[in-house]
Image (tube, rainbow, N blue to C red):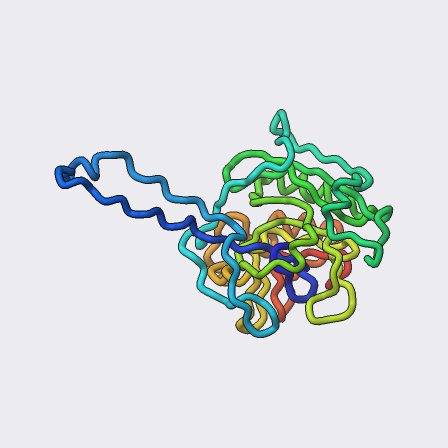
Length: 276
């Protein structure tokens, strides 16, 4: 399970964010009045920047678990486009062999448990938390490629929001934990966390959906490390996966298992074809 921090049991990893730096205070001239100082338009609240603030490492090599920042308690960050959005707003998907430039920036290498020819590169439309359609990318095993584009067609039809959907990079495997990543992704070539066997992600047979909104938890461990506010599933917010919702039904229809049904750990982001 996996992108900018890497997750236990093979989940992806994702980066953490850092608030914008505090602006220096400029002194007022003696004749500046209070009215002049407050008459301008209110300053826009800075947008949270994902992956900018590394966390100190705690036991097990993960970042220190911290309370969710107020800006992320009801997370709805805008999507940064990496591909042109669908021109007509309709769901569009493509399935192709992995282009050389995409392969080069992915985590695939010769020692992975699948060859590059066994994998496929997908592009798929999705709705962002900004209420706009976007185009994302994903690498999966070729035998499930058609099924996965069908799953995301159902999510698109339901306007289930995703923050981002992009291919995981090698740098993310060794990046300092930041605890605020929210990338929806699939293939990541790495062993399961704390184990020597490959994760389902390393075969392109698992997908993580909105990891921040659907965290992994085991005891006091929460991944991403800043996502504790989303462990409470009684407080429903956009992007969360819940039993019987469109996401679980869509994956169940292709025979995939949801980690939210596990007793321990709870891996709410994780769907897999292997049951692990």
